[in-house]
Length: 115
Length: 114
Image (cartoon, rainbow over all chains, first blue to last red; front, side):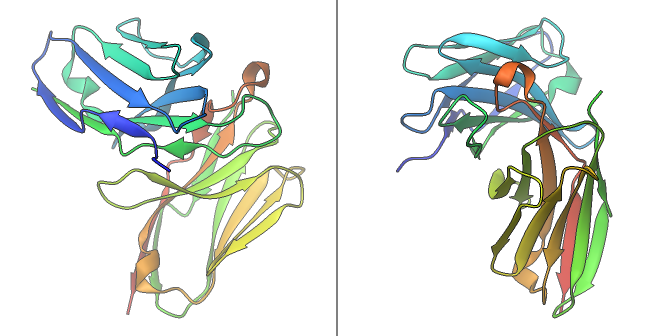
């Protein structure tokens, strides 16, 4: 069974550019969430999607946006990149949107470097 | 505001020794996760603890949850070098019944030396 797939795995951008990252959840998973990991701030929640709807959003500026498609695949976009956006961006998927189960599976991440 | 505190943040152990990592959180939550991360890698799910008193074990790792004390522990028994990694605990905010909205601790970097 394929895991959570994130593309691209590595990318380098310059300040002011924009970037789009993609996440394909495990087959059958409908909930997708995104996290940013940096050495200074650690792991921080960006957004969560279920059935193409954003359920929750973390404390990030409006330059960070995302969406989910009908096949549960998700994308996140960062516009007007800043040096501080350099990070590992992790996508996670889960099977059920409820409070009974709970396991969250993470992809390998997209490592973004902003020069 | 929900906060998750892990201690210690750094842990150097000798092989064969036992130790415990502590995870305290500030408000009620009924779902706590433990993850392992190797350098340059993603997060590997270790345990999901869903109720007070929950205890789960996998190999040399055992996790427990006390929701009344808002405390989870990850106990390492007879450490081996392969356990060297960074361990994170995370608590689900549970806004609106959703899941996947986690607050992570800062992580405990474990180094097991021969």
